[in-house]
Image 1 (tube, rainbow, N blue to C red):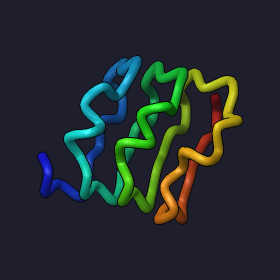
Image 2 (image 1 turned 135 degrees about the vertical axis):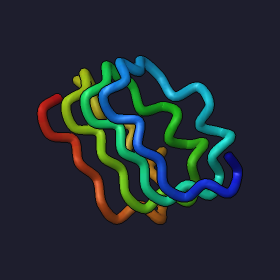
Image 3 (image 1 turned 90 degrees about the vertical axis):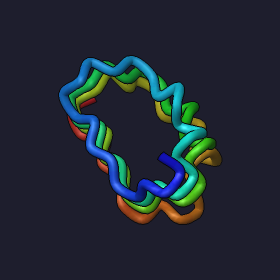
Length: 79
């Protein structure tokens, strides 16, 4: 998993991403249509460039400093 750079886990009813620390080189992450409520796991994915979190259950997004500096595309629609 450490060499993985693109991962699509859309439509899986995921509630968390507990294994995020195992994905240090991940650049693109697709998590459409899960049941994620939190993004605190983002601190464990430092090389993330594209993040798709549309259609989850994220109600509050205030901890902006945990976003990776490399992130340039973020989708949060339908939360």
